[in-house]
Length: 593
Ligand SMILES: Nc1ncnc2c1ncn2[C@@H]1O[C@H](COP(=O)(O)OP(=O)(O)OP(=O)(O)O)[C@@H](O)[C@H]1O
Ligand SMILES: [Mg+2]
Image (tube, rainbow, N blue to C red):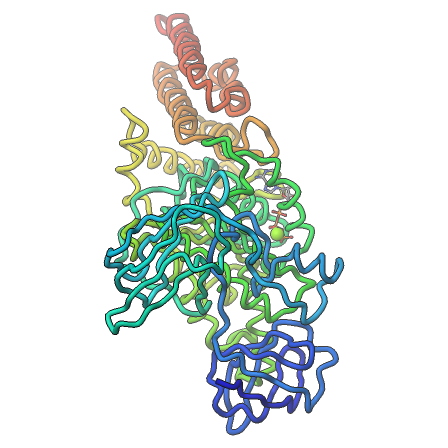
């Protein structure tokens, strides 16, 4: 079918209006001008077609050709995704750099996935098998981390009439021939496409009951997110959004990590690229870059491609979910993405709603977060996408539209706090303002995983000590801490232990950057034991200062740094020492005071 060809009528930044494309529907990809800039039809008004262009439109003038590509904006799915870095419209940055130098030039064409590379394909179906859409037809060991499960494209079903033997194939080689129920023969390769704005179908959605372990104590213990859950990290300038996202990308218990650097500074992505090849997964010991895909659309790159980058990322996430993997997707920052929406809406002369954002801001955010979830995929495997979006409210004001709308769609909220960040309390997650809606669903997992202790009970006790201390500190500011009864001072001091010895976690510390749930539980056990023993000493009439002078008190704050994840027996030794110290105090003061 010959492609429709129209011409440019006007250019306004990333928005181009064309004529002569009456038959081209909204959503279709077009190529604009001689150099073939990538664009997408976003609206039709009479005989005018409105196009959003994903590259710099400088040099495009009225009369330039616009060609309908005949398909919607899509991503390529197949072996070669892992460990790769793409821009917002899935152009591989390495290849583009090689072609155009350090600055990405306009109109540079590059296949998202390498056509020339051979992959060892292992068939998983045989001749005569009846296949359903989305079923696994073969496997490729894509990296040391990931076995790529090649899926039959959605919408295709039939009987296998030929399947390639185990061997090396390129992604465009036919590896399977299928006879459909209409009697048509279809060749299937390892490469498929999917339109980014459309969610990939699943068999059914499941209730999330397993936590995404992030290795960050304040998250895992107090404000957990489930595999397949949705979480937001809102925080003002410099409060630690990016470092938190990086920590999650490094240590989260996901099979695959998709990191979308969306409108943030280029050096933050560079940091990821420099760091990741040297980092190894604490569980498997394998290089983390081999399970990571990076979508980079930094502040100096075209604004429309930023809008597309989150869809590119989440579509790739769905593809790996459908293979049966747990995918964690980070987007830093969804506010920059919303600003891209706003800028484009302005150029489209849409009626602005709150703070100039288009009225569809909320529904777009909703559509994005909705693609998270724990599911039974068409392949029959269970998989998940956990979405973690950073939000950068101007001035750290959480009542602005992006944060407010985001709150409607996420169940976990990690509120970063300027004051805590100012005190160098990191992660600066405020324990009074943050919340998690997954606590009940995850309790069973914790109770099975960490034997003998109830996580929910410990969590409730820790939260109530923190909250009580917060209230008491306000009172103490008025009347002075010395005026408080000892039992209340103990609450304040225990909260200090929790903050310093547990909640604070230095991303740059070799020992403490990642903390297992078992180690986190051990620290909590020690702190609660301290609190209980100290409370009974106070009840015996011993002065709070005597307790605070105990050597074990200050040591509790350092346990996180002193005891690595694989030396947990040291906690039992410490616990013994602490109990002994308390017994001695009891013996000394118990009889007379
Ligand atoms: N977990 C952490 N451990 C140690 N330091 C941290 C941690 N989190 C944040 N920081 C410190 O805070 C600084 C700012 O963090 P980050 O760049 O992540 O903030 P941000 O919220 O992304 O800022 P911006 O608004 O500029 O994007 C870091 O350079 C680091 O010094
Ligand atoms: Mg940042």
